[in-house]
Image (cartoon, rainbow, N blue to C red; front, side, top):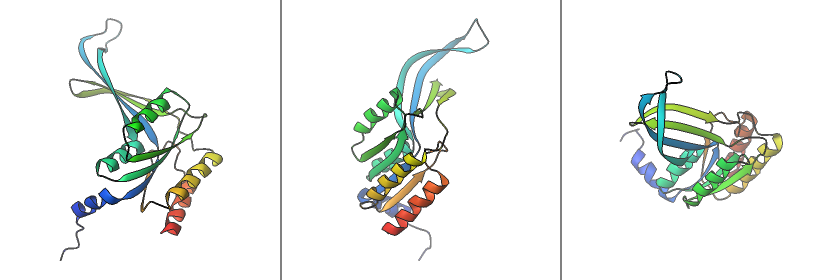
Length: 182
């Protein structure tokens, strides 16, 4: 008998799992294009855009991956009051196994990571984000939503990218609530 866990069996169990995922949501934008010349204005490449793809990023990517493995996911994150938040809501419509609980925080912008890719090579990434802890009121909203979701979830994933949704006290409170919920 081996002490090595059976990872395949564990992954198979996710197909029946109800997971609570809490963390920093980002909009991942991939801008595809070509570079065929250098700018006459400065010694930089001229990037000609040919297309764009948007995806759930950060903790949203974790929830998306859980969904791909068959898990049903309750997802808690904060968004701003902006176009990226609207894009996120649209993306969640295409992910029926994820139930998003998006806390509107008008004091922050929704995180966007824009990657520029030419010839299968990432050339540059541009970030637009707020890196501040949620207010105590918004942190309480996260905890209240987590406590409610814990009534039906058997697994908790905290996905922290340092943008402020998960604070040290908030993490302690969520872990305590998860422990109490068994």
